[in-house]
Image 1: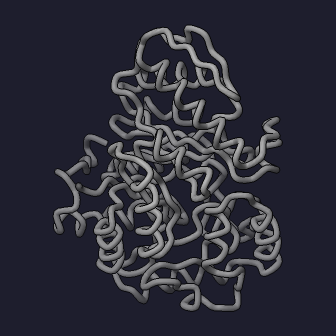
Image 2: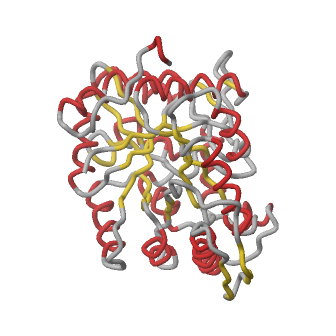
Length: 374
């Protein structure tokens, strides 16, 4: 199976330092902070399209712009780029979600991918009026996705469970194609739900052996065809020294007080995946840039202040391609990448790493668009 590459839309803001979810770290340097207005996001989307990414992930939460509305505004400003829209199943009805996705799929002519975020942070969930505990949220997500898929058949669908009851739920027309569902979660409550419902199981960037173990746990729970993806940042340069120098600049820009504040907040998360991310670096800013290299060319420095994905591929273009190839060898076929700033790093990866992956036979065809047709 070939590799599919996705990029990221920073709808909470961007900059030349790590801009994180909890806003503990705000870039003080002039010009380092970029607001997520539609013109800047359109630049990133068009760049991702031009250099050959299949899609872009857009996050969900109260700390960022709404993913549905933002990406809908970008449909007409791009031509083939797909939008991996993250959403929380507990904050809208499953029939409405099925309708929104069906409409989006027709308007975009098949460019929707869905990232289901059950939610591992009770504080964030409660902002949306969701007071279920961690395991109950996954139980509700399981029912939610059963209903969504039932409605997508195009026939009236009825369901009664612990969390939802719908009668003859329908949409105007079944989506064509049906949007694939991307799903993450590392807990015992999450994995069976992923095994039953996901088209792509997503994990954050742990060392390959840990990722391989997680893949095997999911595979053991299902006989359905399922693909596997990984969420990582990237710092790729012409030489390894240049890449690590760029990582060092990101680390040097972090305020120790901001790191402490972010770590305090992140330690309260109920997300097993988040706790696994925290364990990779231990919240220790004093380890230095290479002390946070937890596996060859896998760096945990981003996770000192950023919730969620906290590791980055760091190295020469060839070294980054090597690690991608290693992940691919254990079963990862989809890579959801990002970097600071997202505009420049898209070019670094697209022009530096992507051609090497193509040379190695890991990419089907050439998705890169010429500048004249972008």
